[in-house]
Image 1 (spheres, rainbow over the protein chains, first blue to last red):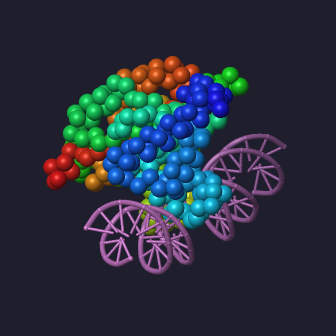
Image 2 (image 1 turned 60 degrees about the vertical axis):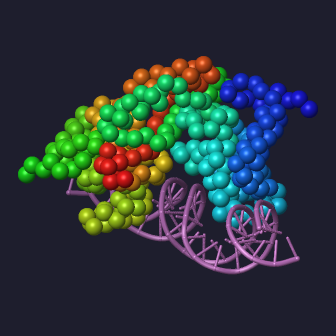
Image 3 (image 1 turned 30 degrees about the horizontal axis):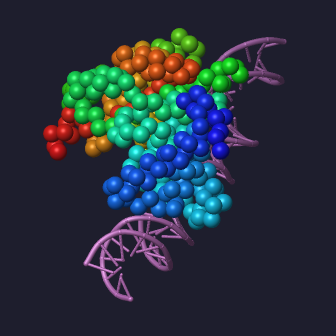
Length: 162
Length: 162
DNA sequence: AAAGCTAATGTTATATTATTGCAATAGAGG
DNA sequence: CCTCTATTGCAATAATATAACATTAGCTTT
């Protein structure tokens, strides 16, 4: 049952466990806030959790078809927008694609590290950086509501393989 | 000739001057590095400079048509990619749109503040934030090559108008 | 100037990403 | 069980972006 092969956070981890925990957390959150964690929404989140890469809406659509769901674009986009809205997933703007959220606490300002070789996306919590941003913004009278930092680069594994 | 009405950096400024300076700087840069600052490329940069908002490729295309250029998508995309590649403009990923660069030094890691009401985009230089990011990334073995921070919020003027 | 080269632009077609509007259905709450 | 609302299914289309190839403009070499 145990499987410690997948790379995450550029480190080894038990991916099955990470998936089931995330699903459980989403389920609990939805119960608490009376949101409908429908089969479709669950399935889309599972698909995202199976990867630590960003999946495009149409890639998800293909996987949904295989799973017996309708494969019209709005099906994927609606599920994704639910997941993003409630913090279970994020959109990676520069890839026009989506990743499951890997940090439990909501309302964070994530940093995404996107490997341009293997397309792995790792999410990190922003540190003091946001304070600087807010300060710089405040100086110009701008009220920051949400920030999104996408860093392109090369991950651990891909650096080695040149 | 002088006109100090437009808002920039959420402050008043002489927009004509800011436009002509930026064009001159681009011209100088292209001369220096033997790049062709063609009429089309100049026109697209001018169009971007006339706004402090992000313009989509198809909006630019419409304006190009008015100016007598071809209005097929590749025309705009190619000019834009030239401008982005050489640091004269940036792509705002969350808007799928483009803004003229307003900071003279190249190879910076920009922060964009995007007003969700008036769609004004203001560019700021990143402060120490990037250092934090690089540190966090390094800890995970990730080599950051490029970062892009887009902050959504409400600008000075729009805060007042509720 | 002619021939040959390279970079830029023009043109056609098409790929990719995303939304609108409306019909059918399932789930929550009385 | 019935009603109401949220969700899903479906068809059409909008918006964003690129590929492939032809043409033109500007240089370079002869």
